[in-house]
Structures are given as C-alpha cells and as structure tokens.
Length: 159
Image (cartoon, rainbow, N blue to C red; front, side):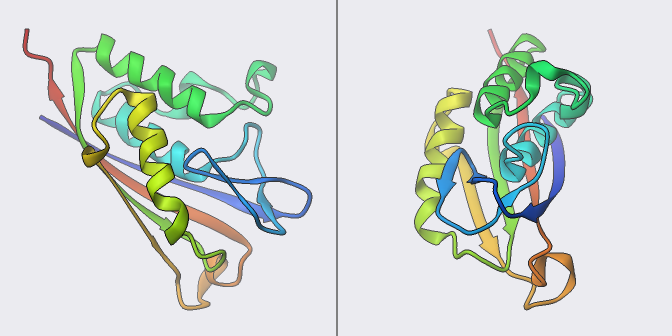
C-alpha cells in the first residue's frame, strides 16, 4: 500500500467559470489557472501521482504547454488514472477536503464524487469529499482563493 497527499490552491477572479470536481458551479467568481483551474481535481491528481511515486501534476501537464490551455481537469485525472494503473497500482480510496468560504458546496458533492469515480474507474464508495470554510480567516476566508487537500491510498495490483 502507498499513501499520497495532494494540495492545490488557485486565486478567485471574475470572468471565469467555477469548476470544482468537474462540476460547473454557479458563482460570480471562478478560479484562475492555465487549465480549467479545478483545484479539487488537481489536488486529487497530485495525491495519486505522489502515492505512485510519479511526481506531480505540473510534471505531467505543465502550464507552459499550450496543449493544456483551458484543459478539463477531469480529462487530466483520467490520464493520471491510466498512469497509476500502468505503474501497477489501483485506488483503494480518496479523501478530499475542499476549503472555500463560498459558495456552499454540499449539493454538488455527490456529482463530484461520481465524476472522480467514473474518471478513475473505481466505485463511488471509494471517494469521499468534504467542504469547509476557514471562518473568514486567511486567503480562503477572505475569498481571495480556494484550496484543497486530498489523500489517497493506492494498492498494488494483484494478478
């Protein structure tokens, strides 16, 4: 078994869609980034890559590569899933903590879990997502940005 941790943060800006966990969430601000800036899927991807000893999302999908400009992070996550399977691992579970003052995310979490499960080819029961605020403290509490932590367990394939 191998454990991985992923962390990502993006700045909130006007004029961008807010995409979290592959779900477009109605909000007046979006996350700034080279791809769709889905901070949740980026943290999950980093956790998976880290657990498998495969570096991080920036190594595989650099923000200097125009091919990833505006890329859907769900597509990137599916590629990460292929990479960890090719390295001989399968996902045991994923646990995510999304940090955002607003908007409230509870109603979107089931779809986020399903999106992750489908892209990785795992059972939805293996994906847990929580959302919290920082009680108006720090950059997330003042709505300057959003952050996400993800932890995963990988298991070696048994054939």
